[in-house]
Length: 324
Ligand SMILES: Nc1nc2c(ncn2[C@@H]2O[C@H](COP(=O)(O)OP(=O)(O)OP(=O)(O)O)[C@@H](O)[C@H]2O)c(=O)[nH]1
Image 1 (cartoon, rainbow, N blue to C red):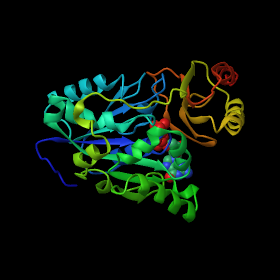
Image 2 (cartoon, rainbow, N blue to C red):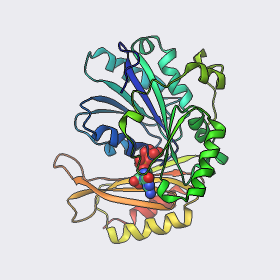
Image 3 (cartoon, protein in one colour):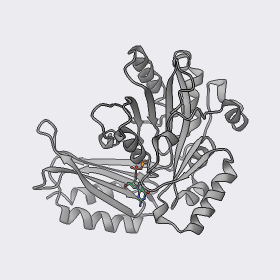
């Protein structure tokens, strides 16, 4: 890893559309034996914080910003968190900001130039975008955020290569190149990549960004938000019955998969001492036990759905029907 500006703390902005593999990459970075300590800032679109609970690493401090898009309402929070971090000297080697899948990375990157205190002490090392090889093509058609995440990237992980053919991979690579001819592209599965291909890149190029976005250093920002995008989260303090939950979620995501872009949850099943983490990207589901529930935490099941044309009443009724 090269330290490009030795007196400044390097910042990596981790972006990519919903479910592309950002948290998977973050966990890889944090789990590697690099001897470095990172401060991590995560931002998610749902009302109930789930992402911070999915980030590994006891040594890392995870700052969570919910209830808003990092590029808009919570940008002040980002500045405050980073400002607070900067007051603590020599405490960490780098900052990693994981944005929501729906964030436009431009205003996030802008924070590190426009805010004086933050700008004086940090250096934006790279915008790293994780792209979902299976779904990116569709999102480039209907989600401008996905396109901006590619356009602003210095490094792109073309992830989930296991889900597509070589021909499809070449096609999506070509589409990426058409939007961004400069980024380094790495094909990955489960965001598996050497850390020195992601951190310490010294890759963020202000001139290139100003060529895309001439107002980049102006401070204000105007950008598109998908007003149709909804997020609903539900929770229950009563244990769930896995024999009810899995058939329900299977049927729901098969039926509503195109509209449910992302679902995820931390679940407490009856007679199960472990937390179960459930993940869905459209109709592709995944899940695993994470760790035992601790005595000092409430065994609350939390689930979030992000998508379009969602029916919150039906989702809630379905979720609550899974209570054991
Ligand atoms: N098949 C396959 N699944 C993957 C791969 N990488 C990640 N996943 C799965 O995709 C799902 C989403 O991964 P995350 O890392 O949580 O994605 P994310 O970008 O952080 O998601 P959001 O923060 O919700 O936008 C999880 O179930 C992962 O296990 C991959 O290369 N192949």
